[in-house]
Image (cartoon, rainbow, N blue to C red; front, top):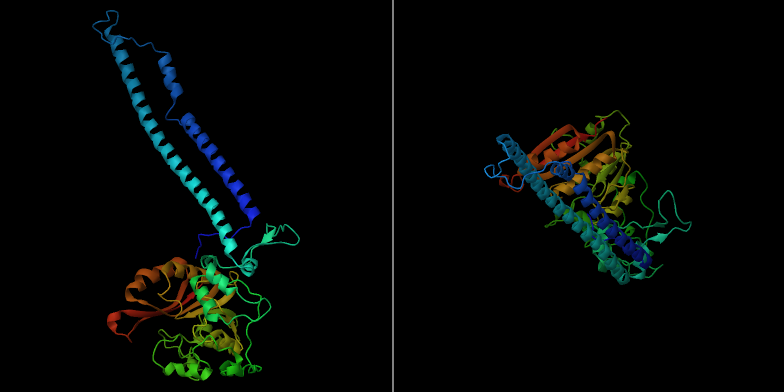
Length: 454
């Protein structure tokens, strides 16, 4: 998501920018005048020299009446009349072209005014940034403002300073950022996981780094050894429970029997539905892992990424088959990332809107279940799908698992979107979702897509 503000700048940078803006304005004014002169002197269809040349070589009589000019013959009159018509035609064409030039000048002036307005806006933004900088806490300034490189200019970076990574959306929430960066340096971080995650979901991603220590669980014990850890619920003292409504894993396991909505409410019960996920292929919406892996030569699906993978069961199933899967998850009233790590798997605490942190043409497989659905704005979803295409190697697989949408959206929105991106369809299954009634016209579709081998 873009941000209309730029990073705050120091005072000497602001002065440099002001001088630069004034120089740009002066250059634009000079350019506009030169452009006007160029149009008036070089346009082929308005050649004033030719017109002047014509009039200087023809002496037209002052009295055009043939009856009062006894020396003028009928042939002379016809010639003069022809010359007059030609002259009038040239004048009419000249007037039309002058009008056209006036319209071009108006357009040029309008463009110039727009450019000057934009330069003025940038100039004002620098002033605003300077004011905002004074509103930031010292710790936040250190976290997000540029730092000079100790060894000076770096040809590799093309700069003499470095900007710490921080989401552009963060600059929209300066009060929240100041609150997030309020702590004792070297001390214990506040337990503000919910607050920090809310900032991430607003678009403040990545968050700035902090110089404090996260709170550690009391009585922490070593994790369950692998591979038993894949299907073992960890001890309660392995995490900090402060941010969550449940205060132990038993509460999370039993949440699947409670009324109300919870994100992935049955994911923490490893002996329930999680135990059978992706083991069977029904030829419809549900694909089996073994059937998917058999599509490619043995051993060529090695590494991948699961977007919004809940508690990491997809990665666990793949790990049993010697495939390494990194799982992204959010801690939505549950310690999803901690739970994934306790199973001996790799978790990443990032939202679905962040650019995937992988280089292009590197992953063998990308999977997502439920997370990619019609709740994501169409443009943002298309960016995400192109990003998935980017990180997959040629011949890599994208397993889209139970994408939810309305029947009216399926063929009108999503099929054309996937066609634009250019995946090759290996499997595509759609089915109506009936649990809320057929009149809702709700659908799922699952797909196995391949990045083409070019």
